[in-house]
Structures are given as structure tokens and as C-alpha cells.
Amino acid sequence: MEYGCIGEHLPHSFSKEIHAKIGDYDYSLQELSRDELAPFMQSKAFKAINVTIPYKTDVIPFLDEISDTAKEIGAVNTIVNRDGRLYGYNTDHYGMTALIKRLNIDLQGKKALVLGTGGTSKTANAVCKSLGARETVTVSRSPKNGAVSYEQAYSEHSDADVIINTTPCGMFPDIFASPIELGAFKRLEGVVDAVYNPLRTQLVQSALDLGLKAQGGLFMLVSQAVRAYEFFFDTEAPEGLAEKIYSQILSEKENIVLTGMPGSGKTTVGRIISSDLRRKLIDTDAIIVEKQGEKISEIFKKYGEKAFRDMETQIIKEVSALSGCVISTGGGAVLREENVRALKMNGRLYFRDRELKYLLPTPDRPLALSREEIEKRYAERYDIYVSTADEIIRTYDDALAAALETERRHAR
Image (tube, rainbow, N blue to C red; front, side, top):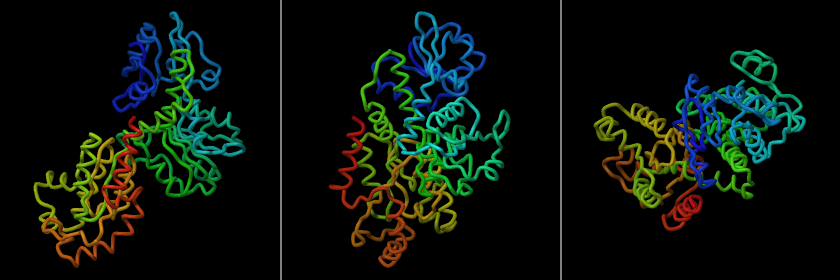
């Protein structure tokens, strides 16, 4: 391996894709067990590498020199081999600082809670200090070395202004977990989550629901990768490169989720988008039919609407963990808030707003078997479709074409 990333588990890392967009060099991912780490580091059979969980502190004894920033933090995530001597740096500090500034979160004189005690936690503490935080409190499930428990965080530090999550809680595949409840923190201004898969964790969504500044770790990941590239090749990256690559990766990873009334053309539009952008098309109703071995009308008749909605929620939770897909949902999918939250973790919701006069009754839609039922469903659901949508598609020729062009532009 010439350039790459080492860690314990890397199947869902974005690093290879990011570095492929930064420059023309061979960058690979290499999983190492703890027993394999020492022989790998001692062999020095690489030009430069990134280091991720859980080895950001374990690699330090193998280094010949370490930057002042990495030394202060006590964690290294970038190593450069110069003529057999290993130099360690911490580009996570640069990446997290860039993310906080991008969110316009002002830490000067503020109180911050840092969740977790690993290498990224050390980075977050250093970043808070460098940005002028008045107080930084580390929170851990097993408090020691000055860290407080989550119970203490709720009872003694509810006046926190900013929360930074550095734990893997909420990371794929356990995407519906959240490390902390935000309701107790009445002065909270912003939330930063180092987790980047999913794109928007439950923690980030909860913060956004409260009107707070919040974002996941993708921009941090891209920014630190660009900074690592500069160390790899002793060069300076073009201005704006991190923002450009972030937009590209976000566009590629974000699902296009279609919502709307039965008969509004979600599946048809989905096929067009899927073909045009060469993305996998997922139809949640079709998956239910395939798994159950029965038509939706039969499922409603046999088991009732609630049973169908439960099946639908389960399927939505499964497909929401995927990325880069086109997802066509059933007409009632947005009626459950948990479905909407799941779909928004990795997706952007597009409401296919077809005029009522074009919505026709069909026998395969149990709640839209007559004109009267369609009009009733339309009146009940329209405001929900609008309020949950990120964008509204009224005709294919204008709004959808514009959305497709945005996707193509980002992909370039």
C-alpha cells in the first residue's frame, strides 16, 4: 500500500472515494486487527496513511516525530513516511474546526459538552480550546480522568451551549441510536456530530427539529482528507477544494426520495430519475408485496391498515440505511413521523405534487378506490406532503429537470 487508511472496520468508509476526487494517486483501505497493527507499523511499507478508529493513539509509539498539534491532542490520524522516518499529524483538528466554522457556531466564551473519550474526543477538546470555549466538559458512559457521566451532564451541565458527539453512537449500522437527549439543554445553540454515515444522524435531526445549527461529520471528513493530502505530497490544495468535494460526495450519497398521493406518478418519475442518473430504484410498496407474497389490497383486507403500516415502517427503516438510491414510497408513508425521520437520514424528500383532477381511482390502492376516497385522502394528506418535503415536483419538465441538472452538476 502506498497511500491509504488503516482501521479495525472499514467497509463503509468514504475515504477512498474522497481521495479519488482529491488527486490521482492509489489510495486503499486496509483493516487491521490489534495483533496486526504493530507488524504493519514496524514494516513501514507505505508512503503515507490515514488512521481511524481505534488506532489514533495506538500508532504514536511507532512514530519518529509528531506535530505539536497531534502531541497536544494525544492522537494521530495522518502519518507520512519520509525516508524511513514516520511523521505524525492530526488533520482531524483542521477538519472539525472547518466544520464548526462552516456552521457559524461561535465557541468564544461558551460551554461545550464533548461526548466520548477516544481520539476524536481529544481532538474536539483541543478544537474547543483553540476556538475560545470558556469550559469544555467530557462526557462518558464510564467516567474517569475528569470525564462526567451522562447523568451528570443532564443534572449539572444543562447550561451547555454546544454539544459535540465523538462517539460511534448512531453510526451505521445502528443508525437509529442517539447518544444523548437534547431536551434538557435549554441554552443549546449548536450540535456537531463526527458521525458521517448516515449523513444526518438521529442526533443531528433532533437538533434541526429544535431549530439549532447542526451537521454530521461528512464535511469534517472531507476537510481533514484534503489537509492530509497536503501533508502526503508537501503541497497546497486549491482553494475551495474541500467544499467542492463535499458537495459531490453529498450529492452522490444522498437518496432521492419520492413522496405523494397514490397515482401521482412516483414510480414512473422514479424510473426516469433512476435511468438518467444510473441509480438503483427502490419501490417500498413493491418490496412489501414481494416479501409478503400478497397484493397490497389483500394485505389491507386480511390484516388491516395498521399491520400494513408496520410492514411499511420496517421496510423504510431498512432502505433508509442505503445511500445513492432513488426511493419511491407509498402514498401514506409520510403519515408516520418515524418514517420521515428515517428517510431523511440519508435522503432528500421530493413531493410529487400532481393535480387532484389527474389522480384516478384504481383497484390496487385500497384507500383510493373511488373518486370520493381520493379527494378525502388528498385533503387529509396534502399539508403533510408539503411540510415534510425538501422540494416539490409539480411537473416533470421544470422542477424535476432542474433537480436532475443539479445532481449532474454536483456529480461533475
